[in-house]
Image 1 (cartoon, one colour):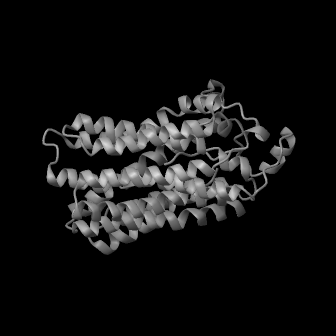
Image 2 (tube, helix red, strand yellow):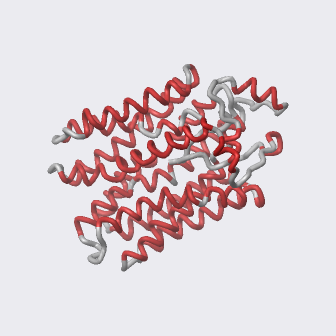
Image 3 (tube, rainbow, N blue to C red):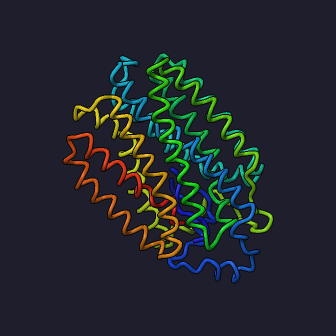
Amino acid sequence: MANRPATTPSPPATIEEFRNIDVGDDDEDDVGSRGEEAPPDGGYGWICVAACFMINGFTWGTVSAYGIYLSHYLAEDTFPEASTWDYAFIGGFNFSIAMLIAPVVTVLTRRFGVHPTMVAGLVFQSSGFTAASFATRIWQLHLTQGVLIGCGIGFLYVPSLPILSQWFVRRRSLANGISAAGSGVGGAAFAWGTEATIQHLDIAWALRITGIIAFAANAAAIMVIRDRNGAVRPSQLGFDTQLLRRYDVILLLAWVFVSMLGYIVVLFSLPDFALSIGLTRAQATNVIGLLNVGVAVGRPIIGILSDRWSRIDTAAVLTLLCGLSCFTFWLPATSFGLTVFFAIICGAVIGVFWMVG
């Protein structure tokens, strides 16, 4: 594979990621046959890994804490006219909007470059968190904490998505795993930090503080991230219908779709599930925090395994393991211990598509 087949949390956003899909692991031969300059497999690429780690942490990591907001919205009846469906749409918008605008963002990145496009995302995301803190009606929360933050994530994440594949071949899965672990580190930090802020201040200030922190961290990442478009010369097409004629692309999309659906359900519903079985709010926060700890620890390990073993076999085994853990540990869970065990195990293997590209 030339680029990783995810998103964020997500499916591939650039045509290059699909165009060079291969069912094997002979990426180095593919590079030589296309006459491209071989990726350095290190050097400044590790700075880009750190930058992508931060982008994952302060985009997907921030929205991973939505489960905390959700439990407070439901318990405190913050918006009396809102239904549970209204709140579900807000969390769904964070992921869906980011992916729906991916073709547009790809074209804008080709036209204006990585940095200007990501700066636009910086503004969208921070504005979304700030504006959400002043929302008084549920439709305002849809537009701010849902759509605007989703646009911010799309403009920040999509341009960064193919960069590590331009810097790494042999260590690509390791680099992707370290980068993707940022969402786990950020998710754990924001889960516990958001709950503490709400307890000491309120929901509005939790949103504002998140927006400020995310703005500063993502700005630092944007300043140091660097692509190799001059050497790789990607076409950066927004959409290519020819790819839909390839059975392997169809299978990949189906796998990512199903995996992403389950990923979002676990991420957003686990805190409310913990409350529903009688756990305290502090325990519910610990559950989602520990799930993200599992993400942070598991993703680099998965990256190492898939570099040394078959990436497709790694993805298949871990996808099966994740599904089985839901039936074995989550459904019968009625105690804090079993729920935490499931959260850590599931967190370690969930979203495997982020690492195996």
